[in-house]
Structure formats: C-alpha cells, structure tokens
Length: 240
Picture (cartoon, rainbow, N blue to C red):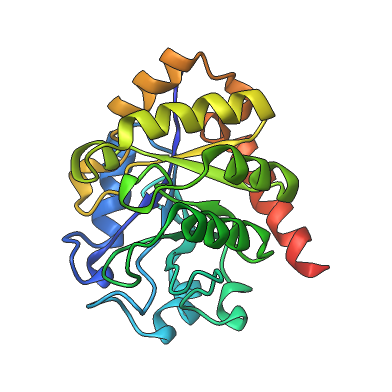
C-alpha cells in the first residue's frame, strides 16, 4: 500500500526536534511524500512554542518544494476530562489537529481514565486525530475508543515512531487496526519525525497494515484526494 501523506511531523519549534519546515518539505519530496502535517507540540510540552506560533501558521506557503503543507498541532491531553492545551479560537484556524498523551504533561492513570479522556477528545469537534493511542503507558479500552472514533467520524493514528520509543505498542497497534477494520474507522499514518530524515518512514505501519489486511479505503493517507476530502470535512464540521 502506497502512503503519500505523513500527518505527524515536528520542526525545531517543538523544542526537541531538529529540522525546519523547509528541510522537512525537501525530505518529504525526496521520499515521495506529497503532503505533511506540521504538527508541533502544544504549549504544555516543555520547550514547545507559545500560542502565537499556531496563530501565525498562515505565513507558511501552502506548498513548499512541491509538498502540500498542512498546518496543524499535536495537542497535549492535560486532564482526564479530555482538556487540551490550545484554546478553541486557535484550533479553529488549523487544518488538522492531533491530540495525544505524554507523561510529561499528564501522569499515567487507569485504563478507565485513559479511555474516558480519549473518548472526550474524540468528541471534541476541533480535534481530528487520536495520536499514538497504542502507547501501553496510557492503556485504553481499544474497542470503546474505536467505537467513539466511529460515532464521531474521527481518525485514529498508527504511529511509526511508537514501535521504537513506546515499547509494547506493537500489539496494541495491531488490535487497534483490527478494531478499526471491524468497525469501519478510518486511520491516518504518522512518522512522528523529529528530524527530516524520518519524514515518510512507515516501515512498521505498512507491515501491520499488511498483517491485518486493512482495506485501503480506510487509510486516508493513500491519496491526496482522500486527504483533501477529510480537510474539507473538518472545515464543514467546525462551521456548524
């Protein structure tokens, strides 16, 4: 399965990443990636940019080096009621919004608490993607969360970086994919690149997608058209 979009990438603005948006775009082009989401960490993360960073993303061209630049964020979930670290007035101006658990921003708790927060996030109209949900440090009830994604027409991310830095993620990611296939939930794919050389690197994601025999129609990162359709879907949703 050919993946042409990377919806989870970081720039030097995240504070612990090492490439500029120009470097990421050039590497994406070299790797055959047509779209990247600039999803720097929200301000609750140590070293992350201030609010104005996300309010000023419009200065970045829509296309750099032939690669479509999606302006987004990786929000930090900061409470088990699903609160996140950017106000809605900023989220309204973004194109693709991820949210995820990081132990530097919220202390790991119980499966019940993690699941409640994940569902609250998926119910938030301004949030599109639950990112790296396979992290066993924040174990969720996978079926309940996948059902919530279905009910709210949201995306679940399979994160290539998790296989290296979030040990134990692989089995969870496999089960997440299996459940997404069963319930017809769309997934997106993120490298979680913190340096340009990892943009579009999906070796683990592709292997699991093949193992589960995930239908291509449920993987939105396989075509520009599916990605653009989702971005329009988001715009229409938050206008309501």
